[in-house]
Structures are given as C-alpha cells and as structure tokens.
Length: 368
Image (spheres, rainbow, N blue to C red):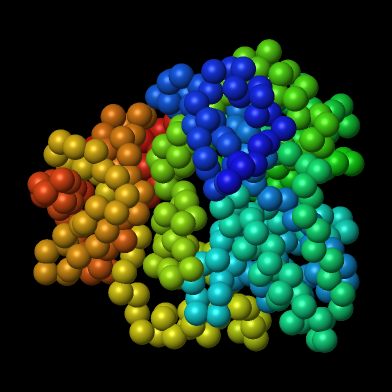
C-alpha cells in the first residue's frame, strides 16, 4: 500500500526524520532524539506536522441541528463564532467512533477529526446527514483537503508564532483565550493542542505550509515527531483514539463523561439511550492514571490486578521524561483501590492509582 504524504514529507526527510507508517500516512516519529524533543516542548516550543488530520466544514441551514444529533456534547454551548468544543462521536451502542474538536464559525462549523478514522468518520457523517435529510434543513459536509495543519506548542510557542502569522491575524490570535479560534480567509488559528502546554493549532492553505514551517524553524521552534507527541499527551492525561477508547468503549468508561451533555433532556443524540442505560446500571470500569512504583516500563495492554475488585488493563503507557517515572492510563474496576499491580513480563510490579493529568504546563500534578 502506498502511504499518503503530507506537504512537508520531503522537509521531514531532509531534516533526518525517521519516517513510519501512521494510519496510512508516512509521518516523522522523531528527528534524532525523542526525549530531547519532548523536553523542547515542555521547556520552550516545538512544532508538529498534523496535516494528516482531517478538517471538515459543516455548513448549511441544518448544520446546528445535525451536529446536535451527531455529537454527544452539545454545539449549543458554542455561543459565538470562534468558540471550540471537545466531544465524542458515538455509535448507537454508545461506543466511541472518534473524539474530535468542533469550532463554531460565522457561517457554520468546522470539525477536526483523527487521521486513523478519516474515511470511517466521513462515511458516518455523510450517512447520518442522509438519514436526517427528510427531517432537517440541508447540510453540506465538505472535507478541506486543500488545508494543512501545524501545531505549535510550549511555553514560548505563542510568542514565537504570533509574528509569523498573517498581519491581519496577529492581534486577534494574541487575544485568544484557551479553546477559542480566529480566522481570516483560509488561515485559521486556534488556541488548542494535545500536549498539556499552551500554543496554537494553525490551519492554513497547503500552498503556505512550507514557508510557515521554515519561518517557525528560523525563529527557534523545533520540529517534533509523533513519538514525543505521544509521551506529551500521555503526561497531559489526554486519550488517544484506538488505544484508550474505541467503538466498543463508551465515554463513561474512558474518563470522558464530562464531554456528554445530558441537558436538555430532549436532545436525541446518537448513543444517548445506550449511555443512559449504562449510567443507570452504574459504571463497572473507570479510566485512571498509574504511576509505577517498581522497576520497569509500562506499555499498553498489560494486565492490571486490583485484588478482590478484579482485573483491568493498561491502555497507554510509557516512561515519562518530565517526571522520570513510568506512567500509564488504565481501565480498571470501578471499585479498585489506590494500589494495584501490573504484570510486566510475568513479574507483578506495584503501581499507584492517580487521577490524570500527570503534567500540565511543565508542572507535575501528582505526588511521586
């Protein structure tokens, strides 16, 4: 199978990146040292080519009602253009088809979905729109494959990025608060991210991507690969689709219950009835953080023993460069206590149960 390539593929190769297959895309996993890249984001600023993600514009007079049915969170919370909302898109059984961000725009909405679910998401979104066509006003679902996306993250990210934006966007972008966005033409700047640090996610015309990337590099922003992106998001306690949740797992068992908008009670979003049944039955499992207290490295799909409460499993795990210990997200019995053991190559190693996130804005949020 031929891997898809982003606009910056040749630039990554020229920089010495190790390229890997990620969800059908050839993407940089690191440019030499994953640990150094991780620390660069926590201490200064790094940039990520995330153009493999999918930008979808949802427009038309029926867009609001369509999204209120499609998503578990409620776009009516977006009271003005420029506001952003994190949500899960569910199947009728309450399983997570994807987690995504929706932005309200002056004339519609913009949805950014994961690369690994690109084709599935677009097919589902169009199928739902078709099924609602007899009851809703028209909806237009348009994939914006003419746009790329670069995330600039870290304590110095905003200061380094602002002067490089189009002049018309500099003042509006500087005034952004977390989870808001501004746009001008095909440039779209959001104060969002996936690292637990401040910064921008910049959606821009593919024709401008290379020059913008080069300008960021000249300003001292370091290129960062998928390896450090994963350890950064894990420290920040952020879920990875397909690893920490999927079509068989509901938001209520993924630490994402807060993204489900239960009111108003008459909003019939997809998966609502299944979630209501699960809520009435009581959660049997919960997603928690683990900090390893013995030797070893936590990885995904390791068996977790919670004693009499039963068994669980790690979903994501890695060594934390910021904390200097091994950490994980794990789905364990709801009544598990504060100590568990993890099976690492046949050896039961003690671990402490904590509430994610582990790190935000460069600071440890847990006691070691």
